[in-house]
Image (cartoon, rainbow, N blue to C red; front, side, top):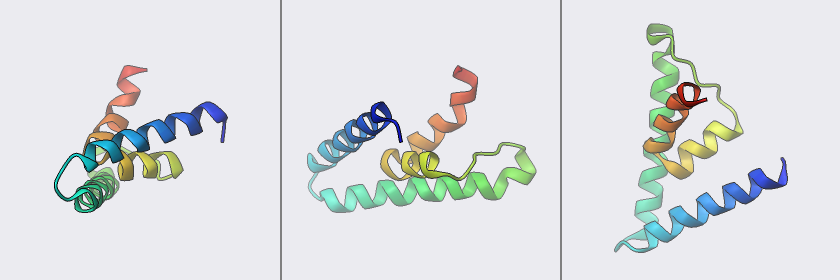
Length: 83
């Protein structure tokens, strides 16, 4: 993995951890966000034959779904439109 990508991953992870730590239950907040993101990624994968929208299941998409949650999955869906 290239060094800039590792640095970006670490920054995202720290930002999410800091935001979750501000709440009353940080562990529950992080776990809930991760499970919601993974569930959204699974829903996109299950609905791919019907919608034609396909997200490849790899380390990058899994990391984005687990760390960023549902907004991360939405970002992955919008990324091809932005580039």
